[in-house]
Length: 167
View (cartoon, rainbow, N blue to C red):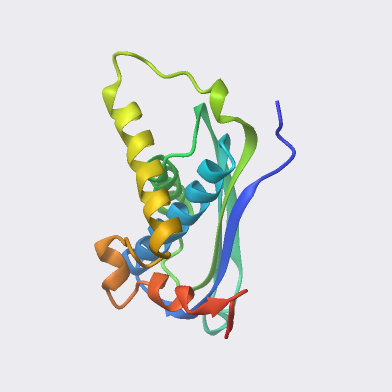
């Protein structure tokens, strides 16, 4: 087992996100990034962590929680579902300023058990690989989820940054 490395995505948000729905948009985009990095490295992970920092206007603070799942994954929507569950359990309905999503307890993707009877897992795996291929070939904004075009979406803005800074 190669549990020493992790794939994470931390983000200082450009503004305070005041509602759960806005935070979920950013979380979905971040889960997409983390899952893509794991797929590119041919890795899967069992432990999904979510950190949320509250705005200084809301007197700071925040939480960091993790959940270990039974079956290792690099599927965006599995990561998102776990993050959404953690958010629902620990979010205090205060403006958020910093989010971090991490996939750890890493192992080789080839150790992942695929079931002949679970077609959705195979289809999602191939869909993720295809989306990654298109983004690599045509750029990160060539294929985005619809939520990235909303006011809360950050993917278009982040695509113009180099190392998190304006070019």
